[in-house]
Length: 372
Ligand SMILES: Cc1ncc(COP(=O)(O)O)c(C=O)c1O
Image 1 (cartoon, protein in one colour):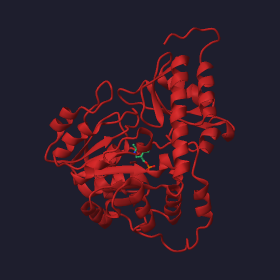
Image 2 (cartoon, protein in one colour):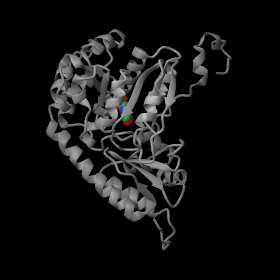
Image 3 (tube, rainbow, N blue to C red):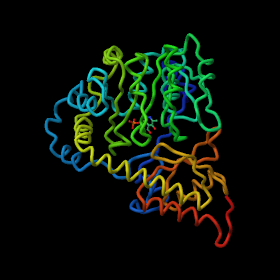
Image 4 (cartoon, rainbow, N blue to C red):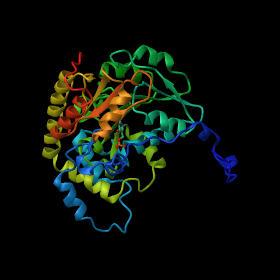
């Protein structure tokens, strides 16, 4: 930090090594930057749900009363509904302002400055970001060539200062699941293991049955992807009741807004809507995969999620990213090892896929043959 104000000597020194998180931009900001009509933007960069919330969510929001009062700090009704939906006990549920808040809460619960957490890149970057923000260190155990977790290497990397192990399943951005058999040896170490199931409904597998055997297991989920309410920020964790009680000591009392609680509750009252949209997204994921493979510019990896990680074959990923953006198609580019030549493309509506494929086709001079 430039010390024009003289504040630097009061700031926590570890902030020097931290950069702000590069969050995705809004449709409006993207449209403005690329001089596009917002209606013509395909936003496929944040794994959001293209179908948005159930109509019941809008009804619940328009019926909101008493927003002059603080929200229920325990989110009682929502926790009960989540417990029923997930198949857990109410005491095992804690809701947060998005899964992101719960990731940070877990770091604040377990990590002292100088302690470490283990993540498995390429993976969701908030595990690293929140660990570093709280003065912790990150031990990275890279995934193998098929993006599977290298379990023996994770076990080797554990030290007395390891306080959390992050397993993202399905993994963002690679899209693959980590089977229970790979999670169990990590749980056997006794170290807290967080299985982030933000994309659970698109992959269909869960580690939840392991909760009764392993008090060191925490499952994270979110309403952002399933229920189309990313903007209202609601996520939840499922874990042992003792850990929920500890977490209640640290969580902000009014962490989930009245609107967020009502919207998440209304979402769970319309499981048909949620299920139909998950099916539509899975169908579209398959259509997009086939179209991409036939088109040849981006080669998708298999996915158990609502996005496809694709390797750029004919141009470098950065160029494809920019050229797509100029045509109103926004996907995620990573300047990171192993995936620097990849783009992550969220599954949108059929019209978004069509726009993506047309934009990719426009990258090639007419008549040029693309070999995959
Ligand atoms: C793996 C994973 N976990 C957690 C989150 C955060 O979800 P939320 O919107 O609930 O904060 C995301 C968001 O993209 C994610 O990809």
